[in-house]
Image (cartoon, rainbow, N blue to C red; front, side, top):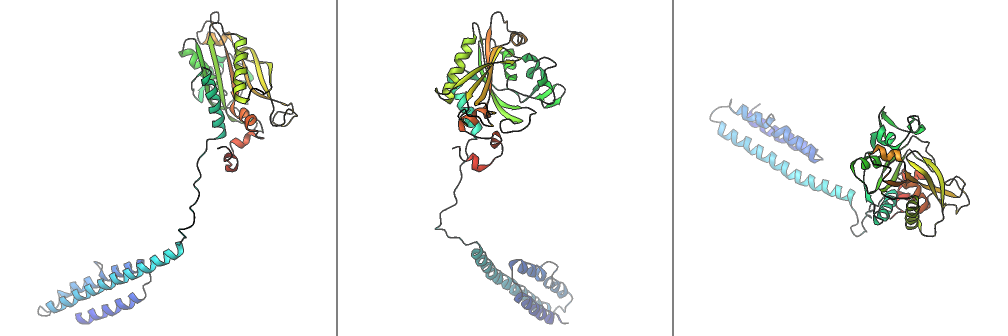
Length: 342
Protein backbone atom coordinates (compact mmCIF):
# COMPACT_ATOMS: atom_id res chain seq x y z
CA UNK A 1 0.00 0.00 0.00
CA UNK A 2 1.31 3.40 -0.94
CA UNK A 3 2.38 5.63 1.92
CA UNK A 4 -0.24 8.23 0.99
CA UNK A 5 -2.95 5.56 1.21
CA UNK A 6 -1.63 4.45 4.63
CA UNK A 7 -1.95 8.04 5.83
CA UNK A 8 -5.60 8.22 4.79
CA UNK A 9 -6.34 4.81 6.31
CA UNK A 10 -4.83 5.86 9.65
CA UNK A 11 -6.86 9.07 9.60
CA UNK A 12 -10.09 7.12 9.03
CA UNK A 13 -9.30 4.51 11.70
CA UNK A 14 -8.44 7.18 14.24
CA UNK A 15 -11.68 9.11 13.62
CA UNK A 16 -13.77 5.95 14.00
CA UNK A 17 -12.09 4.97 17.27
CA UNK A 18 -12.34 8.54 18.55
CA UNK A 19 -16.12 8.39 18.13
CA UNK A 20 -16.27 5.46 20.56
CA UNK A 21 -14.17 7.20 23.24
CA UNK A 22 -16.18 8.01 26.38
CA UNK A 23 -13.63 8.93 29.07
CA UNK A 24 -10.42 10.92 29.42
CA UNK A 25 -8.61 7.71 30.32
CA UNK A 26 -9.72 6.04 27.07
CA UNK A 27 -8.72 9.14 25.12
CA UNK A 28 -5.24 9.09 26.64
CA UNK A 29 -4.87 5.45 25.63
CA UNK A 30 -5.98 6.27 22.08
CA UNK A 31 -3.47 9.11 21.83
CA UNK A 32 -0.63 6.87 22.97
CA UNK A 33 -1.76 4.15 20.56
CA UNK A 34 -1.52 6.39 17.48
CA UNK A 35 0.98 9.10 18.43
CA UNK A 36 3.27 7.22 20.78
CA UNK A 37 6.92 6.46 19.97
CA UNK A 38 5.97 2.98 18.76
CA UNK A 39 2.66 4.02 17.17
CA UNK A 40 1.67 3.89 13.46
CA UNK A 41 2.37 7.61 12.86
CA UNK A 42 5.94 7.14 14.05
CA UNK A 43 6.21 4.07 11.79
CA UNK A 44 5.21 6.23 8.82
CA UNK A 45 8.29 8.39 9.40
CA UNK A 46 10.40 5.24 9.34
CA UNK A 47 8.85 4.09 6.06
CA UNK A 48 9.40 7.55 4.62
CA UNK A 49 13.13 6.78 4.40
CA UNK A 50 12.40 3.99 1.90
CA UNK A 51 10.40 6.21 -0.46
CA UNK A 52 11.71 7.88 -3.59
CA UNK A 53 13.79 10.97 -2.75
CA UNK A 54 11.62 13.17 -4.93
CA UNK A 55 8.43 12.18 -3.09
CA UNK A 56 9.79 12.50 0.43
CA UNK A 57 9.12 16.25 0.93
CA UNK A 58 5.46 15.96 -0.04
CA UNK A 59 4.91 12.72 1.91
CA UNK A 60 6.71 14.13 4.96
CA UNK A 61 4.42 17.14 4.82
CA UNK A 62 1.36 14.86 4.74
CA UNK A 63 2.63 12.84 7.73
CA UNK A 64 3.21 16.02 9.76
CA UNK A 65 -0.26 17.28 8.85
CA UNK A 66 -1.72 13.95 9.99
CA UNK A 67 0.15 14.14 13.26
CA UNK A 68 -1.02 17.73 13.90
CA UNK A 69 -4.60 16.80 12.97
CA UNK A 70 -4.66 13.84 15.36
CA UNK A 71 -3.17 15.91 18.18
CA UNK A 72 -5.78 18.62 17.56
CA UNK A 73 -8.59 16.05 17.67
CA UNK A 74 -7.18 14.68 20.97
CA UNK A 75 -6.89 18.10 22.56
CA UNK A 76 -10.40 19.19 21.55
CA UNK A 77 -11.96 15.90 22.57
CA UNK A 78 -10.10 15.93 25.90
CA UNK A 79 -11.47 19.38 26.72
CA UNK A 80 -14.99 18.23 25.84
CA UNK A 81 -14.76 14.96 27.80
CA UNK A 82 -13.16 16.65 30.82
CA UNK A 83 -16.03 19.13 30.88
CA UNK A 84 -18.57 16.31 30.73
CA UNK A 85 -16.79 14.40 33.50
CA UNK A 86 -16.66 17.50 35.69
CA UNK A 87 -20.38 18.15 35.20
CA UNK A 88 -21.18 14.53 36.04
CA UNK A 89 -18.99 14.68 39.16
CA UNK A 90 -20.58 17.98 40.18
CA UNK A 91 -24.04 16.44 39.80
CA UNK A 92 -23.04 13.48 41.98
CA UNK A 93 -21.34 15.57 44.66
CA UNK A 94 -23.63 18.60 44.64
CA UNK A 95 -24.54 20.05 47.98
CA UNK A 96 -26.53 23.01 49.18
CA UNK A 97 -24.00 25.61 50.33
CA UNK A 98 -26.74 27.43 52.23
CA UNK A 99 -27.19 24.50 54.65
CA UNK A 100 -25.49 24.83 58.04
CA UNK A 101 -22.13 23.04 58.35
CA UNK A 102 -21.51 19.89 60.33
CA UNK A 103 -21.06 20.44 64.03
CA UNK A 104 -17.46 20.20 65.17
CA UNK A 105 -17.36 18.31 68.45
CA UNK A 106 -14.85 19.64 70.94
CA UNK A 107 -12.77 17.23 73.00
CA UNK A 108 -13.41 17.00 76.73
CA UNK A 109 -11.22 16.05 79.64
CA UNK A 110 -11.89 12.51 80.83
CA UNK A 111 -13.88 12.43 84.12
CA UNK A 112 -11.04 10.55 85.87
CA UNK A 113 -8.60 13.26 84.77
CA UNK A 114 -11.03 15.92 85.98
CA UNK A 115 -11.26 14.22 89.36
CA UNK A 116 -7.48 13.86 89.60
CA UNK A 117 -6.92 17.51 88.75
CA UNK A 118 -9.48 18.57 91.34
CA UNK A 119 -7.66 16.50 93.99
CA UNK A 120 -4.24 17.86 93.03
CA UNK A 121 -5.48 21.46 93.07
CA UNK A 122 -6.71 20.97 96.65
CA UNK A 123 -3.54 19.25 97.87
CA UNK A 124 -1.21 21.73 96.17
CA UNK A 125 -3.19 24.46 97.90
CA UNK A 126 -2.54 22.64 101.19
CA UNK A 127 1.23 22.78 100.62
CA UNK A 128 2.00 19.46 98.91
CA UNK A 129 4.21 19.18 95.81
CA UNK A 130 3.60 16.66 93.02
CA UNK A 131 6.09 13.84 92.37
CA UNK A 132 5.84 11.16 89.68
CA UNK A 133 7.23 7.64 89.54
CA UNK A 134 7.52 4.65 87.15
CA UNK A 135 4.60 2.39 86.26
CA UNK A 136 7.03 -0.53 85.99
CA UNK A 137 9.19 -0.94 89.08
CA UNK A 138 11.15 -3.49 91.07
CA UNK A 139 9.82 -5.67 93.85
CA UNK A 140 11.88 -3.66 96.33
CA UNK A 141 10.24 -0.29 95.63
CA UNK A 142 6.75 -1.73 95.34
CA UNK A 143 6.89 -4.16 98.29
CA UNK A 144 10.12 -4.73 100.22
CA UNK A 145 10.97 -1.07 100.82
CA UNK A 146 7.40 -0.58 102.08
CA UNK A 147 7.70 -3.28 104.75
CA UNK A 148 5.79 -6.00 102.89
CA UNK A 149 6.89 -9.36 104.25
CA UNK A 150 8.35 -11.85 101.80
CA UNK A 151 5.28 -14.09 102.19
CA UNK A 152 2.72 -11.27 102.04
CA UNK A 153 -0.24 -12.31 99.80
CA UNK A 154 -0.04 -9.05 97.80
CA UNK A 155 3.18 -10.40 96.26
CA UNK A 156 1.32 -13.36 94.80
CA UNK A 157 0.70 -13.63 91.06
CA UNK A 158 -3.02 -13.60 91.85
CA UNK A 159 -2.68 -10.00 93.06
CA UNK A 160 0.22 -8.61 91.02
CA UNK A 161 1.22 -8.52 87.35
CA UNK A 162 4.86 -9.66 87.23
CA UNK A 163 7.03 -9.03 84.16
CA UNK A 164 9.97 -10.97 85.63
CA UNK A 165 10.81 -12.36 89.10
CA UNK A 166 11.90 -8.88 90.23
CA UNK A 167 10.02 -6.58 87.85
CA UNK A 168 6.29 -5.79 88.03
CA UNK A 169 3.50 -3.36 87.22
CA UNK A 170 3.13 -1.28 90.36
CA UNK A 171 0.11 -2.10 92.51
CA UNK A 172 0.03 1.36 94.12
CA UNK A 173 1.72 4.73 93.79
CA UNK A 174 3.40 4.15 97.16
CA UNK A 175 6.53 3.15 95.24
CA UNK A 176 7.09 6.87 94.64
CA UNK A 177 7.28 7.33 98.42
CA UNK A 178 10.38 5.12 98.64
CA UNK A 179 12.08 6.78 95.65
CA UNK A 180 11.50 10.26 97.09
CA UNK A 181 12.64 9.39 100.61
CA UNK A 182 15.90 8.00 99.19
CA UNK A 183 16.63 11.22 97.31
CA UNK A 184 15.21 13.93 99.60
CA UNK A 185 15.87 14.77 103.21
CA UNK A 186 12.96 15.68 105.51
CA UNK A 187 10.80 17.69 105.59
CA UNK A 188 9.03 15.80 102.79
CA UNK A 189 5.53 16.84 101.77
CA UNK A 190 4.52 15.26 98.46
CA UNK A 191 1.63 13.70 96.56
CA UNK A 192 2.18 11.08 93.85
CA UNK A 193 -0.57 10.55 91.24
CA UNK A 194 -0.44 7.77 88.67
CA UNK A 195 -1.71 4.53 87.19
CA UNK A 196 -1.82 1.25 89.11
CA UNK A 197 -2.43 -2.36 88.12
CA UNK A 198 -3.83 -5.26 90.13
CA UNK A 199 -4.85 -8.73 89.05
CA UNK A 200 -8.43 -8.51 90.32
CA UNK A 201 -11.84 -9.55 89.08
CA UNK A 202 -13.49 -6.73 87.14
CA UNK A 203 -16.77 -5.67 88.71
CA UNK A 204 -18.93 -2.60 89.32
CA UNK A 205 -16.44 -1.28 91.90
CA UNK A 206 -13.04 -2.76 90.97
CA UNK A 207 -10.84 -3.01 87.89
CA UNK A 208 -7.40 -4.31 86.92
CA UNK A 209 -6.40 -0.81 85.81
CA UNK A 210 -7.05 2.25 87.93
CA UNK A 211 -5.58 5.55 89.14
CA UNK A 212 -4.36 6.48 92.59
CA UNK A 213 -2.94 9.42 94.54
CA UNK A 214 -0.41 8.78 97.29
CA UNK A 215 0.29 11.48 99.89
CA UNK A 216 3.24 11.60 102.31
CA UNK A 217 4.35 14.06 104.98
CA UNK A 218 7.54 13.42 106.99
CA UNK A 219 9.07 15.85 109.46
CA UNK A 220 9.92 16.19 113.12
CA UNK A 221 6.93 16.08 115.45
CA UNK A 222 4.32 14.85 112.97
CA UNK A 223 1.47 13.18 114.88
CA UNK A 224 -1.65 11.11 114.29
CA UNK A 225 -3.68 14.22 115.07
CA UNK A 226 -2.00 15.95 112.10
CA UNK A 227 -3.10 13.07 109.89
CA UNK A 228 -6.72 13.27 111.10
CA UNK A 229 -6.78 17.03 110.62
CA UNK A 230 -5.37 16.73 107.08
CA UNK A 231 -7.93 14.09 106.13
CA UNK A 232 -10.84 16.17 107.48
CA UNK A 233 -9.60 19.27 105.68
CA UNK A 234 -9.04 17.45 102.38
CA UNK A 235 -12.34 15.53 102.34
CA UNK A 236 -14.27 18.66 103.30
CA UNK A 237 -12.77 20.60 100.38
CA UNK A 238 -13.25 17.73 97.95
CA UNK A 239 -16.75 16.45 98.76
CA UNK A 240 -18.19 19.32 100.77
CA UNK A 241 -18.10 20.17 104.47
CA UNK A 242 -21.42 18.41 105.12
CA UNK A 243 -20.23 15.00 103.87
CA UNK A 244 -20.45 12.33 106.56
CA UNK A 245 -17.16 10.50 107.20
CA UNK A 246 -16.16 7.45 109.19
CA UNK A 247 -12.68 6.44 110.38
CA UNK A 248 -11.95 2.73 110.97
CA UNK A 249 -8.79 1.03 112.28
CA UNK A 250 -7.10 -1.01 109.56
CA UNK A 251 -3.83 -2.70 108.68
CA UNK A 252 -1.34 -1.73 105.98
CA UNK A 253 2.26 -3.02 106.08
CA UNK A 254 3.80 0.42 105.51
CA UNK A 255 1.91 2.33 108.25
CA UNK A 256 1.40 1.84 112.00
CA UNK A 257 -1.23 2.54 113.19
CA UNK A 258 -3.41 2.41 110.08
CA UNK A 259 -6.94 3.48 109.29
CA UNK A 260 -9.48 3.56 106.51
CA UNK A 261 -11.71 6.51 105.73
CA UNK A 262 -15.29 5.99 104.54
CA UNK A 263 -17.87 8.48 103.34
CA UNK A 264 -21.62 8.05 103.24
CA UNK A 265 -22.53 6.57 99.83
CA UNK A 266 -24.12 9.28 97.71
CA UNK A 267 -25.51 6.72 95.27
CA UNK A 268 -27.95 5.17 97.73
CA UNK A 269 -27.86 7.87 100.46
CA UNK A 270 -26.72 5.24 102.93
CA UNK A 271 -29.57 2.79 102.17
CA UNK A 272 -27.24 0.19 100.61
CA UNK A 273 -26.41 -0.62 96.99
CA UNK A 274 -23.93 -2.71 95.00
CA UNK A 275 -21.44 0.18 94.85
CA UNK A 276 -21.13 0.33 98.65
CA UNK A 277 -21.66 -3.43 99.04
CA UNK A 278 -25.00 -2.66 100.73
CA UNK A 279 -23.27 -1.09 103.75
CA UNK A 280 -24.24 2.52 103.07
CA UNK A 281 -20.56 3.51 103.24
CA UNK A 282 -17.94 3.89 100.53
CA UNK A 283 -14.26 3.46 101.33
CA UNK A 284 -12.27 6.25 99.67
CA UNK A 285 -8.77 6.01 101.15
CA UNK A 286 -6.40 4.22 103.46
CA UNK A 287 -3.96 6.07 105.72
CA UNK A 288 -1.72 5.85 108.75
CA UNK A 289 1.56 6.84 110.35
CA UNK A 290 4.61 5.85 108.28
CA UNK A 291 6.05 2.62 109.68
CA UNK A 292 9.51 2.99 111.30
CA UNK A 293 10.84 0.21 109.06
CA UNK A 294 9.93 2.21 105.98
CA UNK A 295 11.85 5.20 107.34
CA UNK A 296 14.86 2.99 108.14
CA UNK A 297 14.85 1.52 104.62
CA UNK A 298 15.21 5.07 103.28
CA UNK A 299 17.96 5.94 105.84
CA UNK A 300 15.67 8.29 107.78
CA UNK A 301 16.00 8.04 111.56
CA UNK A 302 12.57 7.10 113.03
CA UNK A 303 13.73 8.38 116.43
CA UNK A 304 13.93 11.89 115.00
CA UNK A 305 11.35 11.94 112.22
CA UNK A 306 7.76 10.74 111.96
CA UNK A 307 5.23 11.05 109.22
CA UNK A 308 1.90 10.03 107.80
CA UNK A 309 0.84 8.66 104.43
CA UNK A 310 -2.41 7.94 102.66
CA UNK A 311 -3.58 6.64 99.31
CA UNK A 312 -6.86 6.92 97.44
CA UNK A 313 -8.37 5.53 94.26
CA UNK A 314 -9.44 8.23 91.80
CA UNK A 315 -12.18 6.14 90.22
CA UNK A 316 -13.70 5.38 93.65
CA UNK A 317 -13.86 9.10 94.39
CA UNK A 318 -15.24 9.90 90.94
CA UNK A 319 -18.00 7.33 91.42
CA UNK A 320 -19.04 9.03 94.64
CA UNK A 321 -18.60 12.57 93.34
CA UNK A 322 -20.39 12.13 89.99
CA UNK A 323 -22.90 9.52 91.20
CA UNK A 324 -21.79 6.88 88.66
CA UNK A 325 -23.18 3.35 89.10
CA UNK A 326 -20.32 1.31 87.59
CA UNK A 327 -16.53 1.81 87.55
CA UNK A 328 -16.30 0.05 84.17
CA UNK A 329 -17.97 3.03 82.50
CA UNK A 330 -14.69 4.95 82.80
CA UNK A 331 -12.87 2.58 80.43
CA UNK A 332 -15.60 1.66 77.92
CA UNK A 333 -15.09 4.88 75.86
CA UNK A 334 -18.83 5.36 75.38
CA UNK A 335 -19.24 8.91 74.03
CA UNK A 336 -22.76 9.11 75.40
CA UNK A 337 -21.22 8.79 78.86
CA UNK A 338 -18.07 10.90 78.33
CA UNK A 339 -19.91 13.82 76.67
CA UNK A 340 -21.75 14.49 79.93
CA UNK A 341 -18.53 15.79 81.52
CA UNK A 342 -17.88 19.22 80.05
